[in-house]
Image (cartoon, rainbow, N blue to C red; front, side):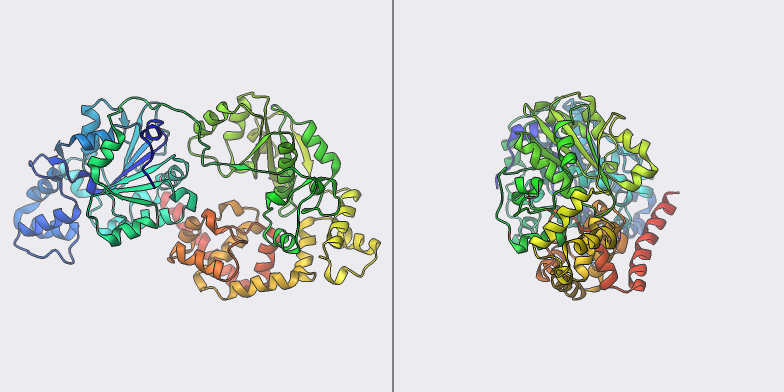
Length: 618
């Protein structure tokens, strides 16, 4: 894959990450090449007569140097190595692009020196500062392990992270900036690593959690002749380019220290466009129906007019016709659609059905994955849209600013559809309304289906042969099963079909697959199931669950294991999540796979990690 075009970098939506290999061509105040950590260790040991650096880190090498030369000379040796005297034109060309942010694992001030000499505007927050947005026309620079420009000689010796142990406890790993870096990589148009060999296990692990489509925009620029094992490692996380700084600088062409040129033509990563194919009916198999009921994630290609009208051949259960017409005809740019229901009562499927209706009216339909760090990128993209659009926010409480900001744009061609759990409507209605700028909404209640809807449920279950032992009941008895036994709640209907019905065998196969996973993977699934059962499945990101439960397995191995046991399609592992979309499936897993003590132990471990984190913050 080729490097991103210079025009993409010029748009100001790309990231630059600099490792030790970038600074190696600069000269420090000792008129020497700036040494990376390995070279600095070798230098310090050589100065005290130790020929081999095996087993030494920078901290222990500095101690050996200190024994011979004393404190002052040790600090000067460390400090002066990272102070920049001269740099190359290639380095200047690379730095003086309108990057959104520059992250670096280096201590030196090469970047600051280049920017100062070339009048490039930067700000340099510390990892201990709150996350802030880059100022307009300005690049943010973050030294994740220490910044020589912020430290005197004495402060450098006290505060810089010189050992692997210190880096393992880096403030960066526990700060909001780690999350900001994660979101930056997701949202960036491209990410370019220069002189970074991926030996940093924390950065490597974070990249490993990214969805495959994100890895396609990550590029590693390293020097020619880089060893094949390093290139192979890089290829797992992006595209390796063994071309060196000069070739990258030539590709960029010229210095661009000014403000970015912003052509907002690409879809922000925080948004996902939903594509529908309006049709009278779709080809639906029994497997399609089973997967929908077990996974809780609809296949948009299977939706058709039959899903709205409840005609034979429908892929999903049709809801109240009045709700469809109100959402389709009464909503507007100033009157959003608010869909609420209990956990598992079909909010996501209903939102997809409404998306289908709007696609039939030639609207583009977008779903928001999460609220990005910089909502300005989304707003700017929306400003370029000439077509009408339906904007879906699944669980509106996860979006504190963006929906209101879109409503404040006052574009009549944009309709917002938001879903929310009934518990929030009952207890925090003012907070729900505030997420939607306190405007009047078209409200749809999925917890109180009409008699017409329950008839549709019975018809759908009967036609698709899902009732199992209930299939021999009379129509009135089937209706009684849905209305009385299941309380008209879709989640309870699905759960009953897991217990008996045609879905029972399928779900039992899933349970057996989970039982064959290793203990660590099982703990991740337990915690994910608990989150889903509580209505927080959108918090089931693999990197977060791994930290909470101290899971040390490789992401690639976890993904392979889930697919091997037939769980890959049901648990959204490819999106960097371990999310069980179906609350009914989550409940069934917790009841049937694990005993209560095992569940409590996993939850306790996760909650203890959260408690310790906030205790440290206090």
